[in-house]
Amino acid sequence: MKIFTTSVGDVYPLYVAKVERKGRRAAELDEVIRWLTGFTDAELAQHLADGTTFEDFFAAATLNPDAKLITGVVCGVRVEDVEDPLMQKIRYLDKLVDELARGKAMETILRS
Image 1: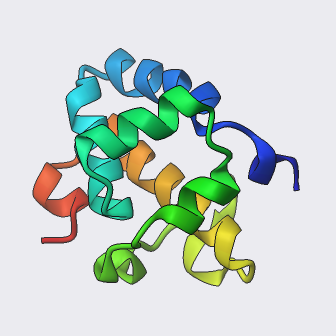
Image 2: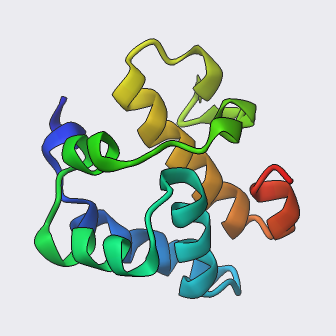
Image 3: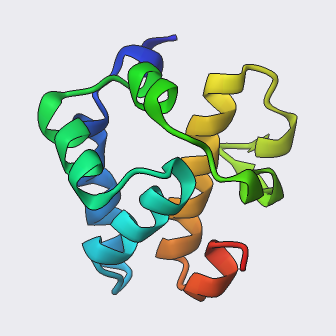
């Protein structure tokens, strides 16, 4: 799939724009991404700067064990029903970005 070879750094500004339009901050977006992937601030920044593909980004990530608690619909597809493991991780990220943009509390988004 084309999204697998897309650079996370190319999509990141779109995520930032989406959450900022709804009154959230890029720092909150970064917190959500770090929670999902286990990356540090420096590691996340490096992946964005290096043009890491979604495939390599999630291959390098240590997915949060609570990611399986992310449920719901993104683009008409239930994230918990996505069969391809990489596509499911991408949909997890999309769902978290949607929740942030919709104004959900960080505690809810981070499944704590």
